[in-house]
Image 1 (cartoon, rainbow, N blue to C red):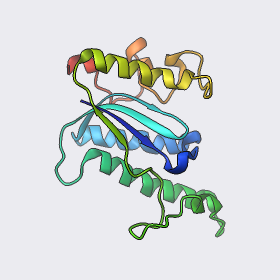
Image 2: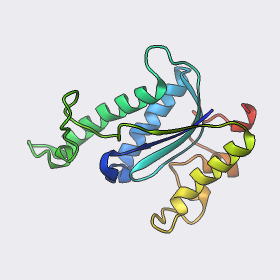
Image 3: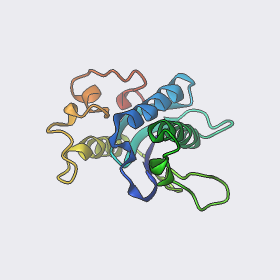
Image 4: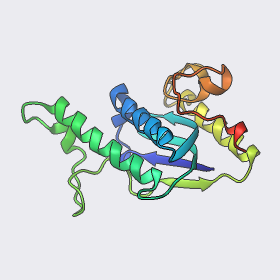
Length: 171
């Protein structure tokens, strides 16, 4: 099991718009359905994402790379639609100076921590679920009220996110 944090390039708040969060949800669903990863916990914040997951298959492409690649492609498509009529100011905020890409949506090195036991996993899950409640975000009053999180899955045993796998069944 791993704790994975990915951040939008330069900490821009690209993920404030729910349409961009939904792109990430679609990718997590695909990673689950394609049996590449078990997602035990997550939160999607305005400029970053936290995952508690187990990698099942690292064949062609590691799930973290697949997540970054797929979402970047979809973010670009979405920003092209928003920009419309040749006005791509939003997309240009993510122009890359690197030779291997035109746009750069995610910071290059996500933070990855191996989770050693159930206690550590529970602490990480609590941290993830408290993220939206932090003073500088104030995205919800209670953990389970923030939609783009696994908190409701653990607290109320409810979730529309079918990709979630309870960490207790794995550790």
